[in-house]
Each structure stands twice: as C-alpha cells, then as structure tokens.
Image (tube, rainbow, N blue to C red; front, side, top):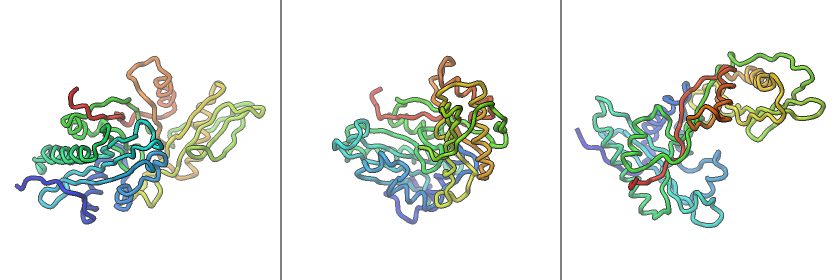
Length: 309
C-alpha cells in the first residue's frame, strides 16, 4: 500500500473532503450535513464570524492523500498583527479545523496520515512565524466547534502534536420540539415577539416591565449551507431579569410554539461546564433537562500548542 502524502487542497478534492467533513459533523449533530459549496466557501471566507473573519490575513487548506483518496484535511488561518485585531488573536496562527479517518481496517495508515498532515500544519505555522498557535474543530455546521467528545482520534492527533486543552468545556443539549412544554396561561404575563440579537425574541412582560426573554435562531438550516436539513434551531439567548414562578417554562413554551409553526423539529442549547454541581451552569442544565432537553455531547474549547508541557 502506498504511503500517505500531504499537499495543498485542489478543487478536485472537494467531494472527498466534504464527505470527510460530513462524517465528522454526523458524529456530533444527528441528521445534519453540509454542501460542497459550504465547505468551499468556508475556505475563503466565514461570514458568520463577522468579528474575527476580517482579522484573517492568510488561509490555506491542506490534505493528506493515499491511493488517490483524501484521508485527512486541515484548514489554517493566520491573523493580522495590527492593533485592530483583538489581543487574543493578534499575530496568531490557528488550525481552524482538522479532520481525518479514524483507525480502521481499510485505513490502517490513518494515524500516520494524521500525523503527517499535522506536521505539515505546524510547518506552515512556523513559516508564518506567528506569536502563538491555536487549534479548533470549527467545521461549517451548527454546534460543531472545539474538539467534541465523539472525535477521540482528533483529540489524540492534537495531543500527539503538542496541543493542550487550555480553555473550557461546553455541554451541548438537544430536545425534540414536540417534547417541550406547551403554552399554559401565566396570570398577568404577556409576550412580545420581536427581532433579537441572536434570532426571534420572546419577551415576557407584566405591567409594561420586561421579566425575561428567550431568543431562538431558526436560520441554522439555510438551504445554501446544508445538503440535508435537520429541522434544527438553537437558543441564542435565555435571560430572566425578574424571576417568577413558572416563567422559564412559559417562555420556553412560547418559543416551542413558534418553532412548531416553523417546522423545526429539534432545538439545541449550550451551557458551560466546570465539572461542579454548585454552579449557575449546572442549575441551567437541570432546568433544561427538566423541560425535555438531554445532553448531546461535550466539546473542549481552546487548544494551544504547548509541546513542552
């Protein structure tokens, strides 16, 4: 069997690389896939990252090939060093995403291919002479970022190369919209529907005072992005200003009613985790699970190259 080789991405690789990307997406979020055009567009611009994307100075995509088949791929970014760029990203290099086949009988050299590609990534970061080297798994699909727990082979490749998890862990939760609460009257409370920061906002009010709000984003399954829609939305914001008995469930029911009208079947939520029980995040998770959510996976955000550790 021929040994894997690493080279820059060619447009002819687009179908095989997209297949590899979608296999990683499918292991994190059920029923979601991205189109070839989405993957190609992500290599040139990331419009959803409207803060950090303008800071990018260079982008490059590399692939590992074996038997004329793409077995691994990585997308790298170099951020500018000027004062306009946020301090964390200033003069930084990043492996924005890294995908590879896990070890299997039909890809016995997958670990070798991953390590060869990772070595090429580090060599590129060295040529860029960046101040710091970051890594992520931010594929162009909803809820796929960091290094999700269903990707132990990616975690292993990062760790073999000297990357260390230096950030925090987030819990991804999912619910069937049909299982979420139904609207029940909450005496003295009315709802306003408006455009919010992260989607459609439902604000609970009493006597003209805002008690809290929830925002849901139903644009995750835009047809130009996904080859197969998952009927998916997420909670962009959920904030209670003045706690009232039953208010959280009532707001969630308002959002669920709207999502049913939109034909959305599943709703995502995100919470931080520090592996303790006595935290606001733990309380939020308990409230969400009581309402019908369950844990989908965990993802470790914030990876930095620290080979000496």
